[in-house]
Amino acid sequence: MDYQQLPEWNEQFFSFVKQHLGEDAMRLRLKKHSSTDFSLELAITQIEARSRRLEKKIPDWYAHDRVVFPSLLSTEQCSSQETAMYKQRLVKGRSLCDLTGGLGIDTYYMSRCVDEAVYVEQNALYCHVARHNFAELGLNNITVYNSDCNQFLTEHERSFDTIFIDPARRGKSHERLYALADCEPNVLEMMPMLLARCKRLIIKLSPMVDMSMLRQEIGRPCRLYVVSLNNECKEILAVIDAQPSEYKQDECDVTCAVIGRNGDVKELSFCYDNEPQAPCPIATQAGAYLYEPDTALLKAGMFRSLCNIYNVEKLHKNSHLYTSQVMIDDFAGRSFRVIEVLPFSSSLCKGFAKQYSACNITTRNFPLSAVELRKKLKVRDGGEVYLFATTIADNSLVLIICNKV
Image (cartoon, rainbow, N blue to C red; front, side):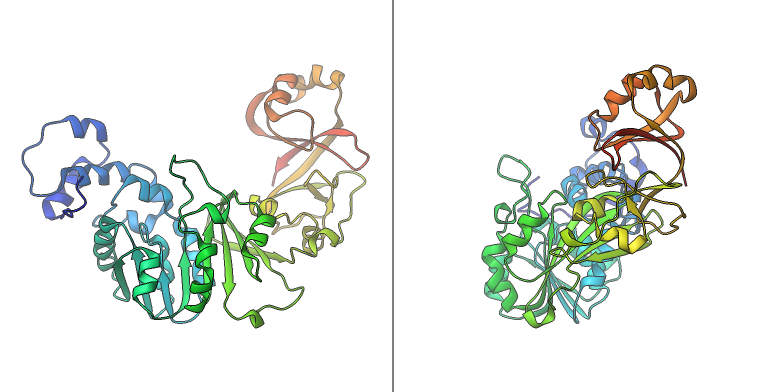
């Protein structure tokens, strides 16, 4: 598509999308169509985009049949509705600037808690679509600028309460990038200018970023938010306030935001530097209940503070599984009722399938992978029984058989 001549859409465009929704996009491209006064390619892109589970990722936008999606890539890279809504909690003040607008999901939700928002995007088509979408969705407090973020900051000498930036994490050969200095734009180089133009800077980062290295890269006080959705780590957010006085020594500087299937959010915070010394009782054996922490907690390295928050004990210092005699109702992760604990041995493997023919297997701090153990036990995957293969306090290997709570 020639982006120099921006496409338009009309009633026939939306009728075409509605008429062919659910059809195979490749066949539509190969099929001969009568001449149209709208971009046929963009219309087919709508059909293709809407077929890719957008009703679950961004239901508010999917439900609006006049929202336009400029490309498949924009729908793949955009935040989910739940994670975008969570960012509202981090916005400070009455003005916001999103320097890497993209599809505009983050801008849309963050703008709902400020008086004025600015969307900056270097892709002209994305800007063209964003103006349309924001108007269709009833937002009149967002101004769209087609500009590179560095150019925008140079040409517009105004400041904002909050600046949000989501640097591209793909290299020239489409390889994934994790280090902040490797992403585009280089936020580390821009940091002095960014902090001079806002009270709060929010940086969206890959869920694969190394937490300890990230803190070293940023090199100044910040708060990190590890965000998961349905037990899948989605993103890490670095929040940096321009005034160092905002930070207090030994305060909680890492927050795990656990978003459930119903949209509810559990927040657990801890001090990253104090975590290695936090009390962490080790259980002598598995109790009546077993707990597997949410991926946000595991990514953040919240292995010891968790014990004090929930009054649970760790099975082993390296197993990252927890136990208690009394049920913990609000544990941030998966909870199980222990049926029995079996010492792992070759003789146990031989007759195991007679009692448990199918089970869901997880291995933690165990010499075999889940696939290898399933093969050795000769059991099918699935069912209502959950098996955790792990190492306990005396360094012995066990199989913990559970039912999910």
